[in-house]
Image (cartoon, rainbow, N blue to C red; front, side, top):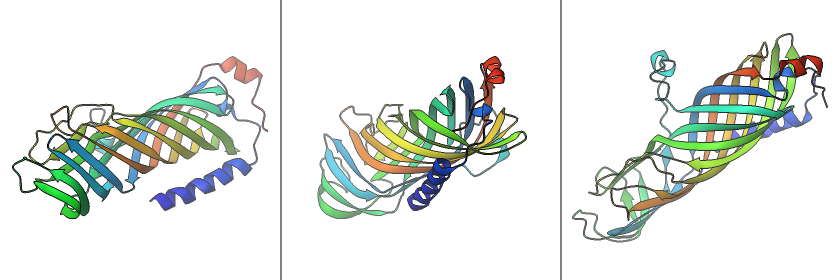
Length: 284
């Protein structure tokens, strides 16, 4: 998935940078406000995860994980009471100048460590009363119930700020095709569902780390009011403070890369209609 993301990102960068710019770009004008809601499909690179507590200190190498997107069902994806069940993205943005916006959003991803995979484990486990007590040195261990279950499923929440450059690629009457490139950074607040050995789990909301990302998108706008948007996004996640058990001394940390493919629906609010009608945006 990372390779597909990189190839699509390079294609969009080329199209945005070298596109011809039509003169009428009112949907991208200064003082416009937008909001969108949509859904993401995510992928993650393998990562080393270190678990540390009074009774153990373990490093699990190259752990595989997947997202957990909800199978499509209109009652789940569009019902007001179930909108937050699938993996979703929500964002509010403001055009502080023509073609440039700054925004705030939340990416609700889900991260699930694959069960029944074999990983190399180093470290020790002492006095837990389980069959896993002992010392490990790149020892193959199967991730299964009784040893470990780790999920950020409610979720891997990326609270972030972003800046984007927009370009009108094509316009016909009341339909516009816009390209966009951007970058952002923020913090991660997962609600981690972790079962480790025989310890009581901790599933509280918690600021676990930080991340950064780049994004490229294609936006189809109608009547300068409503739009459908597709995005590809990728970035870096660093979680040095994951809560795993009910003991304050216990925790985990990991670093990995992520990718997203997003489908979004949104609307535009023009905050300064008089200025826009008197002074249309000029192309470069």
